[in-house]
Length: 149
Image (cartoon, rainbow, N blue to C red; front, side):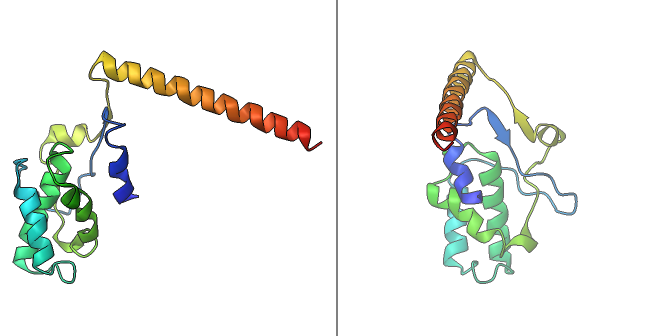
């Protein structure tokens, strides 16, 4: 699910669902949204952090990758880093950090919003298509029931 989640980000741009803040964790470094997330991912891979994430090199690079992944625009990270972080989440769990740094981030962590009329038009189109598809299946199922009696 975590890897496939990214397949829908371009379709669901108006929904911003962030990782929930965990009071037991420290804060990640502030995101800069440049190449440092990709560099951190490369260091995690080349340093053998998939096998053992307990070194300071692994921990510090996981913090950076977590912050960049959770706070930067979707295309900031290369696809390998964007999806590859999920390979490190379990092994680096003891080195996790909170990527929501401000109280506003915490308040807005599960928000869907309409930024412009374009999103509203897309939503209306999607609703209309979904309604037609649903109607098609209902009618098809009705014909199936009639045919089997």
